[in-house]
Length: 257
Ligand code: ADP
Ligand code: MG
Image (cartoon, rainbow, N blue to C red; front, side, top):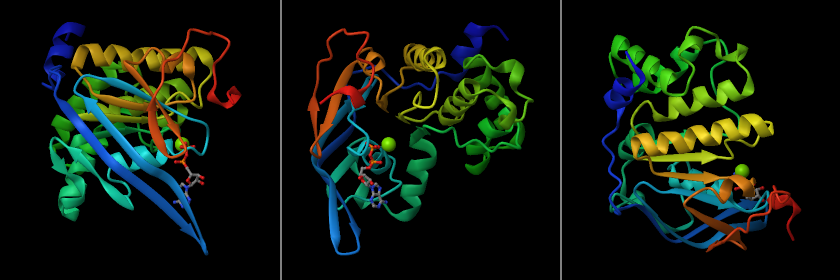
């Protein structure tokens, strides 16, 4: 199959219309440890339009992962509401939350979380098998997505034998194989050298163009953040719009005051 027909075959059908995919209102999240309570998110408001690639920046510990976990329904907020496709997540039953996590959300972690002893193709097929997709169909979809991320020839390699950059590309294929409506990426290039970080980010951008993805990406890397459609900064528990000036030497929020 040639590249173009492969791309057409797996286009998820998501539109680029300026509809809101996800909306967050007054989101608060506190963690309790012993007697102390740590408020990480303190009134986060956010909307994500279909087709957008939104960057969330902020120093380590500012709550980027906490926010993405809440958006993915991997954790529950202390208060506030997340609307997905106009429906409030906190009104979902456990079964609806599980279906939302498995089908509506694709998640890419900083460390790939692949099963090292399984092949790249088996790792990518896994979310489909969990959803009850017949194995041969799951396998075909996995092969197509490995082709999409440029790793068709690595399909039979054990995940543990792949390089860090390749593992992250497999993780992206695994996140997208179910055709999710929202891709959440938590510092997807954080463990990679500059060249592999660029390759992984360029891949996310290319897949955006091809498949009309909607994504929120947490990152430390300001040079990559400013290439996203919008940049939001987590500051004192709230999200604020941020314009990043071109400054190639300013690569990390860690260097900022
Ligand atoms: P970031 O991803 O921006 O580095 P996190 O969202 O991981 O930040 O963490 C924000 C803060 O919340 C940190 O101080 C972290 O220690 C704390 N935190 C995160 N998860 C938990 C948890 N499950 N229990 C207690 N504290 C947590
Ligand atoms: Mg984090």
